[in-house]
Length: 492
Image (cartoon, rainbow, N blue to C red; front, side, top):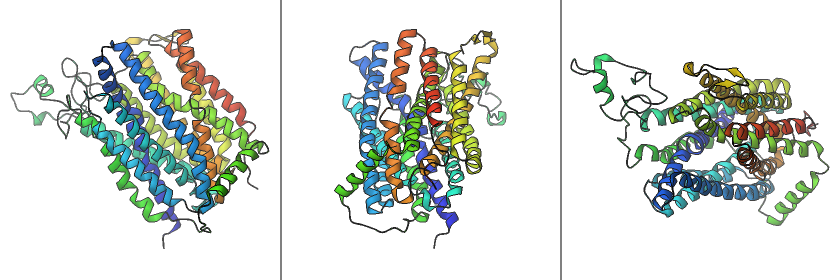
């Protein structure tokens, strides 16, 4: 018989196994690579570079929008079906297969291909993304079976911390073993290299007496750890970058083993599928929202602040590149700092959630994220809100790196506490349906922040204002709506 502690640790391993899809594919490795591939394709059709960038962004954006619509429509329906049958683990199995197939297929997104390659990338990325989102819904719905109600806040926080740690380690492995770091004149590697172009860890004894530093730098491509890529030079085939898809799939397969061994289906009455009954219960849930003021306020609040947070993740790299002129290597380090802060803060936030409840934890995190956006709104290479900065000493870089740590930390806290706040508005029997509705609220208006950013940036002519101002408004509106949420939810 599996102990309660093992069940909890098995449940943690889902976060550890699935997080690299967000870290490696959605943020730091695959999406930037896809942008390069798509830009090359469109330039080959005769577009200039700027038009090709816009076409690539548009193609990807429409693909993600279509995927989000699929998730928004099907999430609450699948949740209602799972609750009506009393079975959830079977859905985790099914959508785990989607995750693995979608991630693995990204290996075939090679540079220099035809338009079919772009469609292949969007379709299979979307398949894996759907798998991750839906598997998460049913995994979250298993939380009430893990422990007593009062411990669920800590369990949620620890799970997110463990998951972010997995994503951080996976990112370090990709950058350190596979990805060729960009080299400038003199062999300097962006991000993970010292000012002289040498790896951060040196051993002069490895070079013979006839070998000087320049010869060492010119010995061939190096990863961000300063070692040769284990799959070789990928300057033409991009093999070291394309391996990220199979790497994420294998990571998921290996680390889901504890989940499937230790997490068991809660003891409920198993019923045959009755689609009409499931859809009827879902309609009743949606109709009840007008009478469930706390749940309605929470769904509206989380819709706003989660949309702002996702936009902050998505546009942080663009801000760093366009406003501060950061290299890809610096943005990679920015991601590592944010992920490390998320590990620590999600763990601390879980303890605070258990002691204080999720509502004050969410509110505090939103305030931190709002203040970060205020800083970003006034930050340039030369000044922050009129206070002059020494650009030669990289003061603006240090400020933005601190902001990155705060974004990662507060973001991890708000996501973990949001999960337990949702649990306070449902019952163990209807948890899948509730998290399906939670997923719906996160996708149905996911266009708000990107659209607002595009509009404000176009009107103001400033990336800094375009990114900062709309997010401040969204976070503050989410905080206002959170005030109408009962701290105990709908629990007795």
